[in-house]
Amino acid sequence: MQDVTDLPFWKLMTLFGGADLYFTEYFRVYADSLLDPHILKSITNNPTGQPAIAQMIGNHIPSLVRSARELQKHPVAGIDLNLGCPVPVVYRKNAGGGLLRDVAQIDSILGALRDAIYTKFTVKTRIGFDDPAVFEDLLAVYASHSIDLLTVHGRTVEEKYRSTVHYDYIARAVEVMPCPVLANGNVVSAQKAQFVLQQTSARGLMIGRGAIRNPWLFQQIRQQQRGEPIFIPRGRDVLTYVYALYEMRANPEVREISHIQQMKKYLNYIGLGVEPSGRFLHEIRRVNTKADFFRLCHEFLDHSEPMPMEPFDIPLKSTDFMCGAHG
Image (cartoon, rainbow, N blue to C red):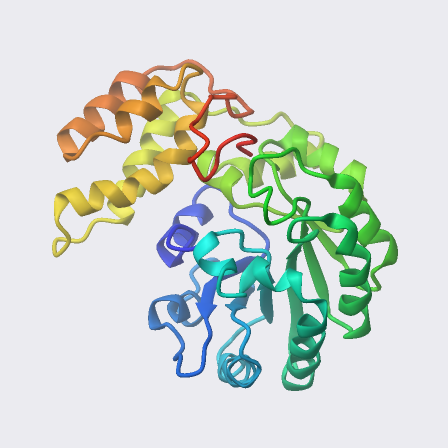
């Protein structure tokens, strides 16, 4: 997730159990682009002990090929093409999920990249731009280029994160693709992870927002699969996590208010599991100082009560990017 699940966040996740495989933030690729050094450090300084796949986003074929070749000079486990990003500023440039409107262009891009990539080649997709009727055509193109892994987010681009996830489309991808398929979308708890794997028969799960809210999620899923008791964090556990996030972002050269704004990116997700009324989210979005930030966090999290396994269904404005289904 761009500007959120970066190298410092990866390092923090390892303290809570961590994932089996990591995807970088996406490298923006265009005619005169260079590899983002900040993102490249996630590969060259990978602190997780687990493989990392470099993610690219763009539509200019020569530049994508050039970037893929440059990335393969570094210790990457694979190269991923993002065909799923639903952010308007991205898809309006016909990148990310915007490419799902042009199956022929995707075919050309994948063909060129398959010739250039000698390591694993993976694709992240949604089920269509505004209509999943195109999904069968997309799957045929993905299969024809012998990609090594397909991750499917079970919504269209226009659905963003607002709708329920159409797990039946992920199951269809599992049925027809010759490569492993990862299921993505609303994996918010160990119980939900088990449900998604049962519904889709996917080889594994890609988790983003759910792990920001609950960094113990990877550990909990493993515990669920082994039949062990699942760790349930309490309020003070989450408060300790928030302090760790704050220290992770600490930089004496960054103004306090800018640091607080960065923290709000994480609290937008964490807040969905704090209390059901939406008051915490409403108030944390309006603080501008470290003192007020932690005063509010202590008010809501300095307790020993167990935290919910699933996020609360907090009503949000229609303009909130993560409105509707929060997982």
